[in-house]
Length: 143
Image 1 (cartoon, rainbow, N blue to C red):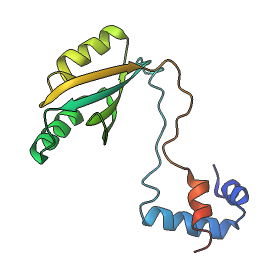
Image 2 (cartoon, one colour):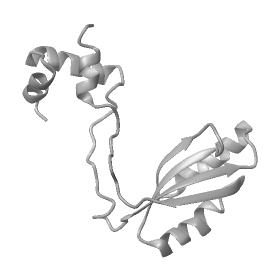
Image 3 (cartoon, helix red, strand yellow):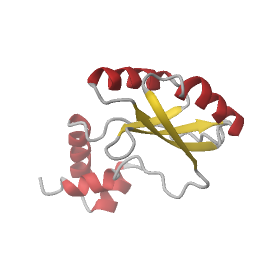
């Protein structure tokens, strides 16, 4: 959206809004501007949420797994987790056969993996990459 629209939406002048956006960019709150691609339109309509357990959590094991997971082109997001599983991944696949390939040749082959639990997303309800520029601008409005 334009600076004028954003300024109006958060109740700031255009110049104040622009200054605050600059601050958010320079401090790393805004890490970049990106195109939001549709995995469905790119031929990967199946979203799989995968929980993975490793044989241990020593630094070397985590590092080796994380290096391997970064190589898998179908992994969209990977988080180190607390709780029952060590990692949570979001994966894009063409279909069930494609996910079987990803599971067999990528996930199962990653170092230190002892358990893989896969869930298939039925429908996307919300997709936000963060709280939003409006929230960030409002939060620093007092500064």
